[in-house]
Length: 253
Image (cartoon, rainbow, N blue to C red; front, side):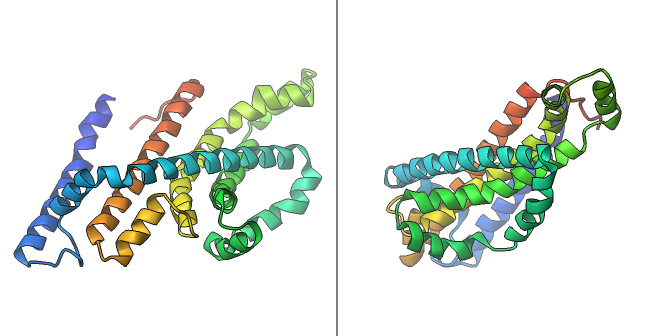
């Protein structure tokens, strides 16, 4: 924690410097607010319009949580199945990699056609965004299991379930959480993209309405909340990782 406080002031200083330059440039060159609003205007808009967009934030948070839980659960279950069934891994792993070459935004119109404008296509988009990082990271974690310990447990007469729960799963947990942290940031982005499909509330809807009315300050407010939500979600996963993986050695910096 002490090291974090000692090093954490540098990015904060850079951020304050960039915001100051942005503010001064907007005032000196008199940049129109519809083109590039000053940070002070963005902050004032965020405070004054809180009652107008707070329900949008809550809607995006709810959608993000549902999609993330479904995507992460399905990703972990898929990774476990591909790990414990080698024939299934050989048959599906390549298809899993190929499927990620299809952008999710391309599938969005098809999901609307198939499932309508309800909440289901939006949850599917978020789940698809979260699924791949978790599945691939978990599989990589299973591959990194210590072979000496694995050989020792088999010589001691341990069954497949004992090997999995006592060795392979704990060894894969750091990789699982790495995938969860990546998916946590992607999930907010996926929620905003899914809301562009025709939702009636959400940060994506608020951003679209602000953009169509040339309220660039509100667009920046939306971007700011997307960043904040992503960072909070990422921090929550990091906290859960520290609580669950106490045996993981700390890095020396």
